[in-house]
Image (cartoon, rainbow, N blue to C red; front, side, top):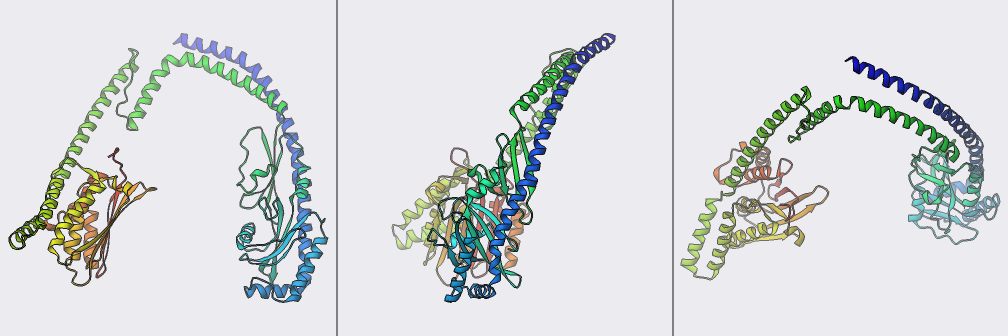
Length: 573
């Protein structure tokens, strides 16, 4: 014990005499780098939050002053309001069109002639009413005008600003959207499209730092301007690089945010990384020394702790490797014995449950309706003795196929096409009983027919539908439809069986739904044992509690049964 204390003191003294001067020197370097970085940030912050913000505000105010004179001509504004309310999509009278043209010319004169690309008035549904362009023939469609209105947010009270790099002019434009109001209620938008170059020059004059980027985003955090034009229109994400400095300020009125990103000087980064490297290197040396001293004591305990956590998380094969002969090794051996006993009990319990479930499934599959077999055999006898027709061969073949299919009890999963074939054999036989026959339609793509599903699912449901829904139907054609499809997002196989039979009253439907929720307590008769509760129980046993049957029925209209099964391909079943 005394030896350990002396060794600790020696190591502590060595670490202090080595680390202290190195950490002190590195801290001074980091302080100087931090001061220089903070000074650069302050300069950038002043230029962006004061100078550039003022220039942008002045630019937008000039646009607003250019658009506002439309309110001087009240007659023009009133006629526009009337045309919009009439939803005519155009200005009806000649005098209003001339006034609108004169307003566009006056507004055009307030800018440099090369800056204005176009002006137009659209209502809040995207219908254009007046268009002006000095160099283009603008043909506006509602798809384009609706895309313009995306930059204009409800309740359309304030002007909006955006940059469109996919405009009708084949070049990026600055778009200014000015709301037109009548009695304080917006009814249309005046759109002014300007060349982006002049606005870009205004912003980029302030981009003076290393790898600087000026960004403007709207209130939805979507980029409306970026020094890298390819990023305009995307959602803004902050640069997570530790060398990046970000200055951010909100513009007045419109809700846009001005952002300036720039990199810290490469030289400052070098000095900072050098100082950080010294600190990290020193810490690594001290950590290695400390680790060497405590390794032999703490490592066996940590390994034992890790195995305990693994056992707690369900890894029952976790075992501790015994490398010593001390008290920690004794704990490890006791842990291994405990884990072995736990694993044995879990494996034993799992095998018992699997055997029980398999026995239940085999017992359920072996059941078949005696009533149906009796009627089928009676039908074959009557046809043979009275009619003496070749139909006996087809009935016997269908019945033999059904017997063979039922007797293969070792198969729990079969292909969808096998279940469909089993249903067709059943309907071939049952249609001999019914003079008018049952018309069935089966919809399943070739890919779906190759998928797997639990055996003996469809035929019992079809039999119940025939016996209890279609045979009692006295009038009309007896119809049934089976569709099988795949729910890709949910990774499920969906089977729908619908008939136009007599349906079920609400009380009977509720009773069956209750039975489906708990098939073990279903108080049904033996003839109903292969019905819905039986199928539900088999699905729960084979597929799990997340799958099962849903039922819908209306008296006089029919019944719909939906099976939700796991999606299994042939190789995975």
